[in-house]
Image (cartoon, rainbow, N blue to C red; front, side, top):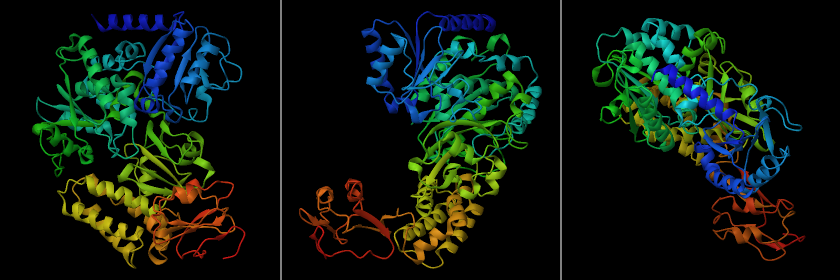
Length: 636
């Protein structure tokens, strides 16, 4: 069967589904949806549909990006706009099925938004909501809209048209199109994709390799996982195009074993490609041969670095090597190899389908296109977003993200994962692109974005990220192995109240040495969280060291809990909850916390009734409080 016949059949089936008289329900079953209870919602849907004698088609889709609203469904009733419902429970599902599918009430009080032609009173258009309106979905174009396990859905929505177009072009023409698009590697370094392909294309040799780096390891990052779970064919089509352009006949998807759902969907997608003649020998009769294998990694963060990744594929310990030679000249088994990450490959297929100039119309002069980010932390609307390069942090955090949780004060945003930096309030209106973030001491990275509020201790944040990179260091470089350990020891002392004069300067000195003396990007960027927090939050370091005080009240060793005599009503709730038996006091007695026994767990603060708010926390000099319990309303 030719591709045109495959495309025609896929389009016919897709149209039949769209025009079906039966209702259709799309349910997000990516990892975020499953973690939020999508399986329970799926069961509830089947139960309620049967109870109401409704025949409907249920389609499992990927993550549309609204992770804060999972579990989430889209209900498509024939002749009506589709309606999204989020934060579902089995009880809400029962109401939606009864009132909307079996009746005529779309339940505006439960709905998030609609899409499609027409409107429903009281329900806004989904893509007009602040969380979605600023977004431009190129990489995420199909996520949440198609069944990722059905290649027909992908083809019916323009899938593999970019590859078909590529087959009619010369390899150099494809590479020139990539250069014209301005696409830069989305894995962190931001190296121009077209130039990278050119190097590999020009390298001598008949055996060349293509690699997809899916070893996403940054804490708080899940962009690549979501794309592979929601639209695996977009990534694989990009690899096909890249392989044809550089002359590769074999490719690898290097993915961490901790992504079982993504692996499952990739395996299904590869099988479907082979069945459709889009993978293997003599693809679509073109004479082009290409095979893809999946290589599962054991979760080593350093294997995100391309030379360590290649060592792992070859069966060796994942450790970086010096460059040159670069992979484009000598990569897997000494052969020219091109490595791009998941998001880069997903962009490639869209660029070939629509054009380089279309892609370049988004973003900035030097940072073209869009970027996906995982927006997490102390922000109201967490999830997966895709925005044009150059958008400001403020637009992301307060527009798309809905601001800071609990109305608290914004403090900083960590971009680029453990290799990035922490940007304070003064950068809220700065553009998010490669150049601007680099100038601020951070990086775009793969796309992790962690938002922090006033309760976050920046010294402890630096300690957390350095602890991660230090434990993930392969140990090959002395500066990385020992330098990060020395920096971590100093940070541990500071958060434990043992900081000394000169520690800040010593951290900066060692940090610069680690950056300059490390072989790969792990060591070269590991000090970034420390150096940027010193640069922008030096006062917090000084408070920890000089005053033995944590301004954010977050470092356990530097805080103490106490009971305010004037507010305590002697209810005894805190004493009963205290596992270390540090709280003394009887009924109608003002309670007292024995600081020598206090484990500083904060349970007393959590359980004290809000109407009393008698438990407080302080840092620095001890707060004067009664040594022994006294009657409520009495005097110490």
